[in-house]
Each structure stands twice: as C-alpha cells, then as structure tokens.
Image 1 (cartoon, one colour):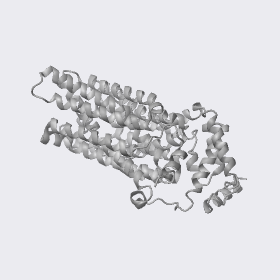
Image 2: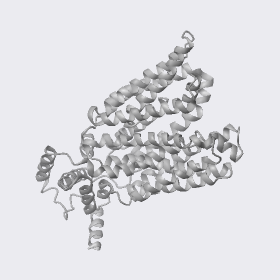
Image 3: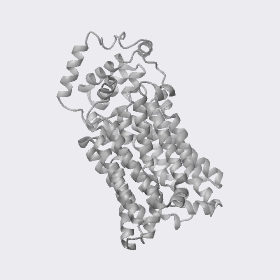
Image 4: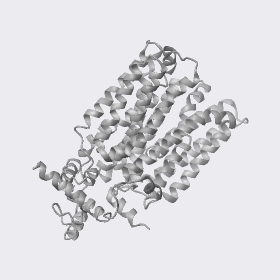
Length: 493
C-alpha cells in the first residue's frame, strides 16, 4: 500500500493536474466542484479550534526570536566584565549585533529549507542552532566563543520568522488568519518581555547571564518536539504530489466537511500553472510575472525598518533616563505598549482588514515621530519637552504594533503565490535584515552628525512615504482564502 502511494505521488510530479485522475477528474467535474465550493462557503466556517494548537506551537519560534533579541540587553555589562572586554564598545556592539549577521544567513536559506524539507522540518532545523548557540553562549569563557554562540542563535532567528509566517498563513482558516497572524507579533513581544524579566537578577547573582541563555533552550526544545505532533502544510504536500496526505492534513486543520472545498481550490490553481517551472530562481522573483508582489513585499519590509522602530528601541532608555525614569521601568513601559498594540491588532485584523491597519499605523507613527521632533524645540519648557519625548516614544511603539509590525509578516505570505511563497518570503526577509543591520549600525553616528530633530524628521517622512505606498499598492486580503487571493492576482494584467 505504501509503495502504491509513493508511486502515485511520483506519477503526480511527472504530470500536470489536468492529466492526473486518481483523486479527481478536474475537467469533467469542474462544474460540480465549483458548486461544492460555493455551497460550502455559504454554510459555516471551519472550526478555529482545530488549527489553533498547531499555530501556538509554531509561534514558539517567534517567542524565541523576541527573547534572543533582548537577552543580552540587561546582562551585557556582566558578560563584558566576566569575559574580559569591559569598556570595549566595539566588542559589546558585536555581542549585540552579530546575531543579525546570522539572521541574514538564516533568512537567505529559509525558502530553500521550507520548500525542500517542509514547514515542520524547517521549524525543527530552526530550533537546533538556537539550542546549540544558547548552550555555547552560556558556557563561553571568551569573546570569540560568545560571538560563535550568538551567530548560531542568529541563524535560527533568521530561519524562524519567514517559516512561521508561511506556516501560520497556510494552516489557518481564512476567517481567523489575521488573528492567528497577530499571534506572531504577540509572541515576539512576550519573548522580549521574558528576556527583560529573566535578566533582572543579573546584577545581584554572579553568572546569572549564563542562566539567561540556558533557559532559552527549553522553549526551543518544545518547538522541535512539538512539531512532531503538528500538521504539515497541506499546500506544501500538494506541491510535492502527496495528495492523500494533503487531504488528511486539511481534515485535521479544517474538519472533514471542508476538505473537498480546499482541495478543489488547489486543483483549480494547479490547472492555471501547468506551464510554470518547478524551480524558482532569483531572476524570476526580480523580473518574472510575480516580480511586482515581490517588490511590494520587499518595500514594505524596508519601510518598516526605515520608519525608525529600531532607533526608538535603541534610544528609549536614554529618553526615559532624561525624564528621570529608571531604564528598567522605561523598558517595561515600552514592552507593555508593544504588547497592547499587538493585542489590539489581533482583535481588529480580521474586522477592519490589513490595509486599513497598515495605513493608520504608519500615520500614527508619523505623528508620534513628529512629537519627538517637537520635543527637541528650544522654545518648550524642559518638562513639556520630556513629556513630548516620552509620550512620542510610547505612541510610536503602540502604533507600530497596531499594523506596521504584524501586518507585513502576515500579508506577504497571503499575496505570494504558493509556488514562490517560501523563496519570496526568504528574499523579503533578507531585505528586512539588511536594512535592520544598517539602521542599527548608523543610527548613533547619524544622530551625532544630524541631530535628533533632522533624523527624526527623516523617520517621519519615511512613515508618510509608507502611507502613500500602502494606499497605492497593497490589496485587502481579509476573509479570503489563499487560493482566492492568488486567483484574483493572476487575473490582473
């Protein structure tokens, strides 16, 4: 029986779905399938309870992403003292940012890994360097070993976010896909806050920074083990010719009554793409028929970083200190604002839609950055300037979390056709990491050379540019299945 199934799968790979008949005769039954699709959609939505556990396991990768972004912030002084590079700002900067280099490498390979091994195996491959890197960082006795551990962790950080966005998008029912996509941002916020909370005893307990790294191996192991129990992406299985497995996973995720609808949509899409090659090249992403959606995705991620979000995070401690607020308390305020905005986005994502959230998010960020510019005015009393600065920082983080933070990672897998989805996400995330790296590298230098007023005015301008870009280029995907979105995009000239 197993041999017959493998033979059927390999036969499917060699033929188009037009010629494939063991499961469904698509041409002869197209009218029936279309009626079934319409009738199914007119009844009830699939139960969200079926897919929720799979989504929650996947978002552990986002929790780890947030945790490792923040894990060295509080313990950095202790790390530098214990490893013998205290006062060396270059070495301290490398400990913080070397993971970004690893993340860039991981994101470059994420598309090939997700397409070659499947989404579940990609999560497990993401967890392995995070476990190994965290262990190496925790036992390090020199700067070189610490940098190696941070780089290994970074490769997992780069691999995780695009795979999480792919997986959550592909396993979620259309009517809650936005809500589930918001879980990624919420998990990232919780990871950042967990890193802050766990780092609190570092100044009182010798060597506590090692524990901060080791604790992260627990959720990484849970991710690797949990994926053994999770469903594989039915879209990926269908692309591999594993029809029976795709049906079985749809049944796990949507319920038996919705399997025929989902499979019919996949067959319909497959009929439209019989002339496309199996291998997705970089030139196709940049110049092929789907280059426009890749351009939209890359630009959204670039504008997300050029808005100044990382600069706000980097500079927030200084802002709060100048206002007389302890840095620990200031970081908590930023974390709560980020989490609050993410929760509001989760509630609104499937009600008002992705595009509207993006628009109002970037508008709010532009206004918040304008408050920061106003706080630099010499005509304002000192107290008023501090209030504007602190209020602008918190408002910026809140409005970022409402849309500019969570929406791009959800929207892009929705608008990318299934054949290029993994490779296109990898390309766009690579753009994200490159811009992220240069913003982090140049921010303090630009702040020194240009001053806060001009620099924050530039950030506000980028936010307004993002508003115009979203208005002209982004389509609404709320409530549509992935197949419906792809069909509508294919129909456009």
